[in-house]
Amino acid sequence: MSSDESKRFRQSSKIDIVTTQNIKEYLDTNEIVVMGFYDSRSVSFYELVEDLNEFGRKLADQRKNNQTKVRFGMCDVARHSFVQVQYAAHITSQQQDPDRTNAYRFGKPNFFPLIVSLFRNGVSDHEYTGVVTKEMMLPWVERAELPIVTNVSSAGALQKKLASSEDSHLI
Image (cartoon, rainbow, N blue to C red; front, side, top):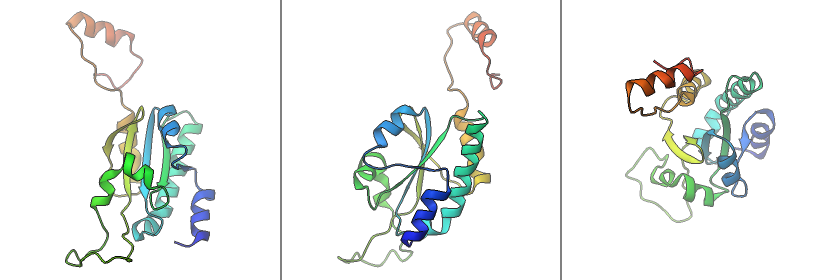
């Protein structure tokens, strides 16, 4: 990806740019974060940048209308390897070379795929495994915002919890 395209990604979208310097604070200050780890030299990122921008814009619109609290951050792990090691170590176990019989050669760059993970209260919750489009990712985010299941000790405690809850997703 050229530097012009990289600038367009950063300036035109509503995606938070996450770096080695700000990742801890970013994850700690936002309750739910969809975090994308990408290699800016990667074909997968180059092909998906517009879809990611669309998703970022849609989430920003929903935040503006108080429909979601979810933040969407992206980190270029080719530039911020500390982030990759600390928060997305599994990314190095994957490569984009479709011919797995090719041996690694020194001096040949290894491009990593795009990895999208959900973080809840600063801790990785799970990885997104679907198609990267706003139509497919938004329902995943909506499910992530559903309240965590809580245990109750008795039927009375359950009735009390249901009566005091403003959450329409409780059954």
